[in-house]
Amino acid sequence: MNNSNKSGADITVWQPEDATFWESTGKKIAWRNLWISVPALLCGFAIWGMWGIITVQMLNLGFPFSQAELFSLTAIAGLAGATMRIPASFLIRLAGGRNTIFLTTAMLLAPALGTGIVLQHKEWPLWAFQIMALWSGVGGGNFASSMSNISTFFPKRLQGTALGLNAGLGNFGVTTMQIVIPLVMTLGIFGGWGGEPMTLLKDSGWIFGKIVSGTPTWIQNAGFAWLLSLIPLSALCFFGMNNLRTVSPNTGGTIVAFFKIIWLYTLSFIPAGFGLYLYLPAPSGLGLVNMWLVMPLIVVSTLLMLKLTAFGTMKDNIATQFAIFRNPHTWSLTLLYIVTFGSFIGFSMALPLSITVIFGISHVPDAAGVLQHTLKNPHAPSALTYAWIGPFLGALVRPLGGWISDRFGGSIVTQIISAVMVLASVAVGYVMWLAYGSATPEEYFLPFMVLFLLLFTASGIGNGSTFRTIGVIFDRQQAGPVLGWTSAIAAYGAFIAPVVIGAQIKAGTPQNAMYGFAIFYGLCLVLNWWFYLRAGAAIKNP
Image (cartoon, rainbow, N blue to C red; front, side, top):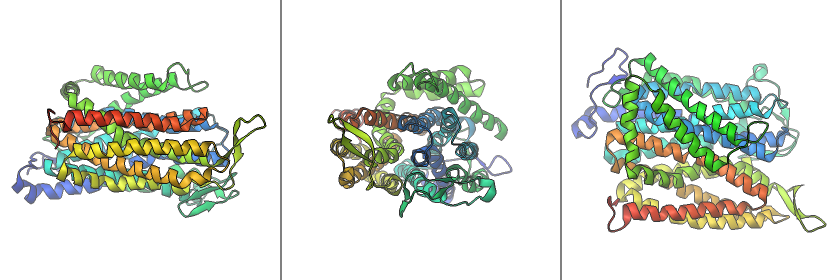
């Protein structure tokens, strides 16, 4: 092995499929990069997903926004993170692994600090909070580059395990955020610098139970608290990770690499912001297009901007990586990954506010027999007490999904979990229908949570199985971009789920959202069988 600069960050020889090289040199380096990658990715997930918890507490603190507007904050963060994954999927080859993971982790400091500032001002307009939600998308984008990077370090026989560990433990950022944020909001941990507390107008909670109304609450700590981990983590990424020159031969030096990262991330903000302006209703936007039009518009615009504005070696590298779009397996695996990760992150974003709205209100008829959804339910479960359990289970089993898939094949595992998700989605939709028509919805909370835990567990296992399939089908040069691309499109689940569930709750038919998801899972079950399991499949896996 030869390091090509004084810092030792660049590695010019990398042969993980060579057993001798792997045992003598590669294994130690690969695992070191993985264990640094995990906490960095965890913080990225936490920053990206934090609006799902913040909006619940904004409701409890009496911020002057409607339920639909609060759902929009979660959806905006989801859409921005998904869109930023598109350029992020190309960053490793263009800028190097160490350079990319360091800078994109350091970038998280901005939304963490900015969110803490805006949350201190209940009177500020909605657009100020929407900008911070958009900026939080940086954390979502980091997943694509992180997975693309780790895939280059490990041999094919360990792809499922390594990617499962990176993604699974990184996904704990959602759970960590859902546990940490309710706790730090009860403490003045930053003293006078951290601002003044607000007073809870409604009961809230955390994992150990209820937090009663009247409790002083530092909601701004939801952003500020991440500064304590992001600063040392950024340094660890810079001094402890490596660039593989066999994968990233033309980064052009550290400063040039940083410029590429900033340039490509900036490009993704433009179509995301413009698309949201077209989609969001007044006063934040024009309200001209619906969700199903704005997503492909943003994706296509982002790809065009990447292709048309690239220059120098960036142009050649991006053109080379665009070759993945000519492979039909890129598209089939993109849909399958929407089933797994799209469901995981979408439900993680939407579940806290869904619990608050469906179970926090007694749904009683008025004199004319029309259901009203305004009376507070005194026996409501706290979303902040229970919402973390689903993402926790989903992240916990993700490495298991990778390990099982390494042994038995990714596609057979994907087939089984898809069938489970079809049945669980139909069942949870039925329970939501019962709860939304009841004066005592808390009676249905236990089956609701059990079924959602089943969905999270199945999606977590499927996350590992789908990535394992990608590692088998694509070579080392294409696997990274495909991993990034599929994770980018699947991440739009973080936008779709809050919008669809929020809209159906507003319409009084929350069950229809889950029935729609079940239909999609069923179609993808057939697709997986056709491409990878039937007797005449081009690629049997197994």
